Image (cartoon, rainbow, N blue to C red; front, side, top):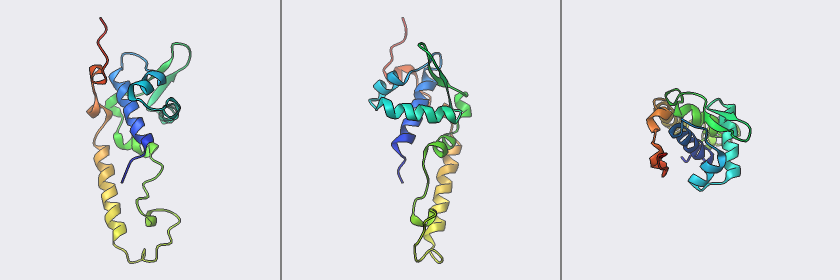
Length: 142
């Protein structure tokens, strides 16, 4: 199983916003910090804003900030919004044509594993991932 880059960038954007909670962050600075595409990060920020994880402030001095406290943002909730699907194998998807689906035991085992994965992520919040600005290479203001 592998998470998409979209989910990875979503978590990293939220972690940076949490670390910089005293001020707004911008797409430009975050993209430069992580060395990722500004356009891709803009899509990430838009989805996280629509989902209620971030607030976007428009205008010249605008930017992004967390819409909730870090301890209110469950990691499982973020991934359920950012991952397109968790169809690990064909029988998890709607277009299943696998011959052995009616008698296969793999589906139940993988479903149990996926449930455990989700349950684990639901026990953790963004607060569990908090880093200091210095961890991002940001020097304290003098």
